[in-house]
Length: 261
Image 1 (cartoon, rainbow, N blue to C red):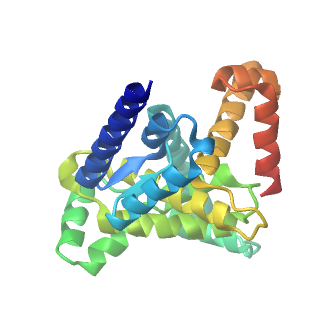
Image 2: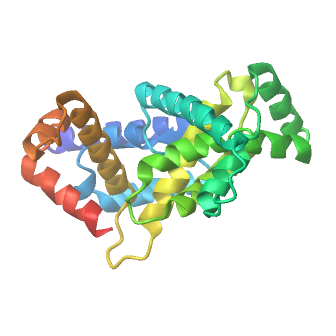
């Protein structure tokens, strides 16, 4: 029994080392990858905190888990938003005094980038060009808005969500490596989501919610929205629990934590 425990501990240490090496190599790791190692995360908070501290010390960023389906949805939402903003930009309506609407109108005038120009700008940023950095940021402000829209009603104003997302976008521009082959928007999505979810989690509250719980809350909300679209009504705790393999009471408990934040 003792030998089995030692073997499990050794395997866990090896897995942790592997995930640390992977994080160092690519500069980031997803929370989903971490939680695969810690399926019983809530019972091992101290170990998780130590691991997050190691990632921080090594300069490895931890991103909220994002599926390919969600990435595609973000791109579709950004394309649709671009069309809306094009219309808004042509309106010379003096009643547009609301800061958010004025901001949306302003970014609607900024042209989208081609894949070639995106790489050219990324290379310029690498060489220290401030103009390239500014253009790459401005050309992706729509992406921030399309992602921020999904977090409305979580305790922060839409404008604050956009501002936090913009901070994530700026960090993405600084850290993006065009040689890795993925689109800038794919990379930036992680940073934008991370900045927004951290801001929500860091809002003034009496109980500090651990990072892994923020991930669970976000996954629960996404699952709830997906089911609502499929069945045409708000899903029950039982239906959500079945989809996420959680007890219905646990689903209700997580929803309560989300509402309290």
